[in-house]
Length: 86
Image (cartoon, rainbow, N blue to C red; front, side):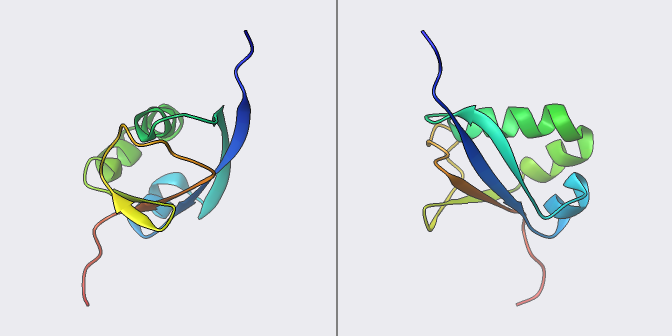
């Protein structure tokens, strides 16, 4: 059996962009990958700085803000660390 793979577009903001060293990239993960799998891949790629950011971040998936790591990532995920100001 072959996993179906899609490019999951990940956009980073604020501290997440600093930890990744970029503002967006594409990850090759199964189409039904949960956010937990995205998080694991990002920590493996970027290390402790990204792990700290993701421990307090929310995710925007299909225009819905979530912290539910069992939610399917879909085609685009925005990583939103807490923002200061207002």
